[in-house]
Amino acid sequence: MNIAVSTSTEGLSTRRQGQWRVRWESELCLADHVELSEFFRKSYGPTGAFNAQPFENNRSWAGARPEVRAIGYDARGIAAHIGVLRRFIKVGEVDLLVAELGLYAVRPDLEGLGITHSMRVMYPVLHELGVPFGFGTVRPALEKHITRMLGRQGLATLLSGIRVRSTYSDVYLNLPTTRIDDALVLVLPIVRSIGEWPTGTIIDRNGPEL
Image (cartoon, rainbow, N blue to C red):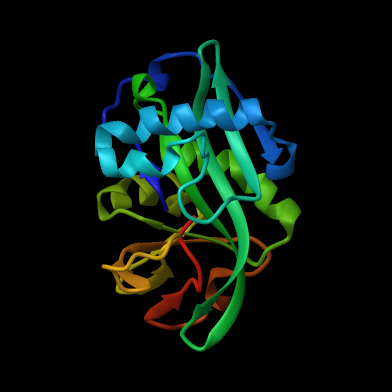
Protein backbone atom coordinates (compact mmCIF):
# COMPACT_ATOMS: atom_id res chain seq x y z
CA MET A 1 0.00 0.00 0.00
CA ASN A 2 1.42 3.38 -0.99
CA ILE A 3 1.39 5.42 2.21
CA ALA A 4 2.32 8.98 3.08
CA VAL A 5 1.42 9.62 6.68
CA SER A 6 3.09 11.16 9.70
CA THR A 7 3.23 9.39 13.02
CA SER A 8 2.44 12.63 14.85
CA THR A 9 -0.69 12.77 16.98
CA GLU A 10 -1.44 16.33 15.97
CA GLY A 11 -3.74 17.33 13.11
CA LEU A 12 -7.29 16.31 12.47
CA SER A 13 -7.49 14.60 15.81
CA THR A 14 -7.92 18.10 17.20
CA ARG A 15 -9.88 19.63 14.31
CA ARG A 16 -13.30 19.22 12.78
CA GLN A 17 -13.10 16.62 10.03
CA GLY A 18 -14.13 17.47 6.51
CA GLN A 19 -16.31 15.62 4.04
CA TRP A 20 -15.47 12.35 2.30
CA ARG A 21 -16.60 11.68 -1.27
CA VAL A 22 -16.47 8.34 -3.08
CA ARG A 23 -15.64 8.81 -6.76
CA TRP A 24 -15.38 6.32 -9.60
CA GLU A 25 -12.33 6.90 -11.76
CA SER A 26 -14.37 7.74 -14.86
CA GLU A 27 -16.19 10.46 -12.90
CA LEU A 28 -13.00 12.47 -12.38
CA CYS A 29 -12.40 15.38 -14.73
CA LEU A 30 -9.08 16.91 -15.74
CA ALA A 31 -9.26 19.47 -12.94
CA ASP A 32 -9.68 16.64 -10.41
CA HIS A 33 -6.54 14.88 -11.65
CA VAL A 34 -4.57 18.14 -11.58
CA GLU A 35 -5.66 18.80 -7.99
CA LEU A 36 -4.95 15.22 -6.92
CA SER A 37 -1.53 15.27 -8.57
CA GLU A 38 -0.54 18.38 -6.64
CA PHE A 39 -1.93 16.85 -3.44
CA PHE A 40 0.13 13.67 -3.85
CA ARG A 41 3.33 15.55 -4.65
CA LYS A 42 2.95 17.61 -1.47
CA SER A 43 1.97 14.56 0.60
CA TYR A 44 4.65 12.18 -0.64
CA GLY A 45 7.36 14.81 -1.14
CA PRO A 46 8.41 14.93 2.55
CA THR A 47 9.03 11.16 2.41
CA GLY A 48 11.52 11.58 -0.45
CA ALA A 49 11.66 13.15 -3.91
CA PHE A 50 11.57 9.69 -5.52
CA ASN A 51 8.19 8.95 -3.92
CA ALA A 52 6.68 12.14 -5.34
CA GLN A 53 8.11 11.65 -8.84
CA PRO A 54 5.30 9.42 -10.20
CA PHE A 55 2.84 12.27 -9.72
CA GLU A 56 4.52 14.68 -12.11
CA ASN A 57 2.71 15.88 -15.26
CA ASN A 58 -0.72 15.88 -13.58
CA ARG A 59 -0.65 12.12 -12.98
CA SER A 60 -2.87 11.14 -10.03
CA TRP A 61 -1.69 7.54 -9.55
CA ALA A 62 1.68 5.90 -8.98
CA GLY A 63 1.46 2.25 -10.02
CA ALA A 64 -1.81 0.57 -10.92
CA ARG A 65 -4.68 3.00 -11.45
CA PRO A 66 -7.56 2.82 -8.94
CA GLU A 67 -11.14 2.33 -10.05
CA VAL A 68 -12.70 3.91 -6.95
CA ARG A 69 -11.33 6.64 -4.71
CA ALA A 70 -12.42 7.97 -1.33
CA ILE A 71 -11.31 11.60 -1.18
CA GLY A 72 -11.49 13.68 1.97
CA TYR A 73 -12.04 17.42 1.54
CA ASP A 74 -11.93 20.37 3.89
CA ALA A 75 -12.00 24.13 3.42
CA ARG A 76 -8.49 24.06 1.90
CA GLY A 77 -9.19 21.36 -0.67
CA ILE A 78 -8.12 17.72 -0.68
CA ALA A 79 -7.19 16.53 2.80
CA ALA A 80 -6.83 12.74 2.41
CA HIS A 81 -7.16 9.98 -0.17
CA ILE A 82 -7.38 6.21 -0.45
CA GLY A 83 -7.92 4.19 -3.61
CA VAL A 84 -9.38 0.76 -4.42
CA LEU A 85 -8.80 -1.59 -7.34
CA ARG A 86 -10.47 -4.95 -7.84
CA ARG A 87 -8.01 -7.52 -9.11
CA PHE A 88 -7.12 -11.20 -8.99
CA ILE A 89 -4.04 -12.05 -6.97
CA LYS A 90 -2.43 -15.45 -6.50
CA VAL A 91 -2.03 -16.54 -2.88
CA GLY A 92 0.18 -19.60 -3.02
CA GLU A 93 -1.52 -21.59 -5.79
CA VAL A 94 -4.97 -20.04 -5.35
CA ASP A 95 -6.36 -17.29 -7.60
CA LEU A 96 -8.34 -14.89 -5.44
CA LEU A 97 -10.48 -11.85 -6.19
CA VAL A 98 -9.71 -8.95 -3.84
CA ALA A 99 -10.19 -5.22 -3.64
CA GLU A 100 -6.71 -3.80 -3.17
CA LEU A 101 -6.46 -0.73 -0.95
CA GLY A 102 -3.66 1.70 -1.67
CA LEU A 103 -2.55 5.13 -2.77
CA TYR A 104 -3.12 6.43 0.74
CA ALA A 105 -2.04 9.93 1.67
CA VAL A 106 -2.83 12.73 4.10
CA ARG A 107 -2.04 16.39 3.53
CA PRO A 108 1.08 17.27 5.55
CA ASP A 109 -0.67 19.94 7.63
CA LEU A 110 -3.27 17.40 8.77
CA GLU A 111 -1.02 14.98 10.57
CA GLY A 112 -2.88 12.53 12.74
CA LEU A 113 -5.72 11.56 10.38
CA GLY A 114 -4.96 7.87 10.58
CA ILE A 115 -4.99 5.27 7.88
CA THR A 116 -7.63 3.42 9.88
CA HIS A 117 -10.17 6.25 9.52
CA SER A 118 -9.84 6.20 5.74
CA MET A 119 -10.30 2.44 5.71
CA ARG A 120 -13.48 2.80 7.74
CA VAL A 121 -14.76 5.24 5.12
CA MET A 122 -13.97 2.73 2.37
CA TYR A 123 -15.39 -0.29 4.23
CA PRO A 124 -19.02 0.18 3.05
CA VAL A 125 -17.72 0.56 -0.52
CA LEU A 126 -16.01 -2.83 -0.29
CA HIS A 127 -19.33 -4.36 0.76
CA GLU A 128 -21.06 -2.74 -2.21
CA LEU A 129 -18.41 -4.17 -4.54
CA GLY A 130 -19.16 -7.61 -3.12
CA VAL A 131 -15.54 -8.77 -3.04
CA PRO A 132 -14.48 -11.66 -0.80
CA PHE A 133 -11.65 -9.66 0.80
CA GLY A 134 -10.01 -6.29 0.97
CA PHE A 135 -6.23 -6.53 0.61
CA GLY A 136 -3.23 -4.30 1.04
CA THR A 137 0.33 -4.13 2.30
CA VAL A 138 1.50 -1.85 5.09
CA ARG A 139 4.78 -0.86 6.69
CA PRO A 140 5.77 -2.68 9.90
CA ALA A 141 5.79 0.69 11.70
CA LEU A 142 1.97 0.76 11.40
CA GLU A 143 1.40 -2.73 12.80
CA LYS A 144 0.45 -1.72 16.35
CA HIS A 145 -1.72 1.18 15.19
CA ILE A 146 -3.75 -0.87 12.71
CA THR A 147 -4.07 -3.79 15.11
CA ARG A 148 -5.41 -1.45 17.80
CA MET A 149 -7.86 0.41 15.55
CA LEU A 150 -9.02 -2.30 13.15
CA GLY A 151 -7.84 -5.69 14.36
CA ARG A 152 -9.43 -5.52 17.78
CA GLN A 153 -12.77 -4.64 16.18
CA GLY A 154 -12.55 -7.60 13.82
CA LEU A 155 -12.46 -5.39 10.73
CA ALA A 156 -9.02 -6.49 9.56
CA THR A 157 -6.19 -8.93 10.19
CA LEU A 158 -2.47 -8.39 9.67
CA LEU A 159 -0.46 -11.33 8.32
CA SER A 160 3.32 -11.50 8.60
CA GLY A 161 5.94 -13.76 7.03
CA ILE A 162 4.51 -13.31 3.53
CA ARG A 163 6.43 -12.12 0.48
CA VAL A 164 4.54 -10.06 -2.11
CA ARG A 165 5.68 -9.99 -5.73
CA SER A 166 4.70 -7.08 -7.97
CA THR A 167 5.66 -5.80 -11.39
CA TYR A 168 6.99 -2.30 -11.90
CA SER A 169 4.63 0.21 -13.49
CA ASP A 170 7.22 0.85 -16.23
CA VAL A 171 10.02 -1.11 -17.88
CA TYR A 172 13.53 -0.16 -16.75
CA LEU A 173 16.65 -1.46 -18.51
CA ASN A 174 18.62 -1.48 -15.26
CA LEU A 175 16.01 -3.29 -13.13
CA PRO A 176 14.35 -6.72 -13.14
CA THR A 177 10.73 -6.86 -14.30
CA THR A 178 9.40 -7.68 -10.82
CA ARG A 179 10.16 -6.86 -7.21
CA ILE A 180 9.51 -8.79 -4.00
CA ASP A 181 8.59 -7.06 -0.75
CA ASP A 182 8.58 -8.47 2.77
CA ALA A 183 5.62 -6.46 3.99
CA LEU A 184 2.76 -6.94 6.39
CA VAL A 185 -0.34 -8.10 4.54
CA LEU A 186 -3.63 -6.47 5.52
CA VAL A 187 -6.76 -8.58 4.98
CA LEU A 188 -10.29 -7.25 5.46
CA PRO A 189 -12.94 -10.00 5.43
CA ILE A 190 -15.90 -8.73 3.41
CA VAL A 191 -18.05 -11.50 1.90
CA ARG A 192 -15.91 -14.36 3.22
CA SER A 193 -14.41 -14.96 6.67
CA ILE A 194 -10.74 -14.61 7.52
CA GLY A 195 -10.63 -18.39 7.98
CA GLU A 196 -11.24 -18.74 4.22
CA TRP A 197 -8.14 -16.70 3.28
CA PRO A 198 -5.84 -19.14 1.43
CA THR A 199 -2.63 -20.29 3.05
CA GLY A 200 0.60 -19.40 1.30
CA THR A 201 3.83 -17.56 1.94
CA ILE A 202 3.97 -15.83 -1.46
CA ILE A 203 1.37 -13.48 -2.94
CA ASP A 204 1.67 -12.54 -6.60
CA ARG A 205 -0.08 -9.36 -7.69
CA ASN A 206 0.66 -10.08 -11.36
CA GLY A 207 0.74 -6.33 -11.82
CA PRO A 208 1.99 -3.16 -10.14
CA GLU A 209 1.07 -2.13 -6.62
CA LEU A 210 -1.85 0.27 -6.31
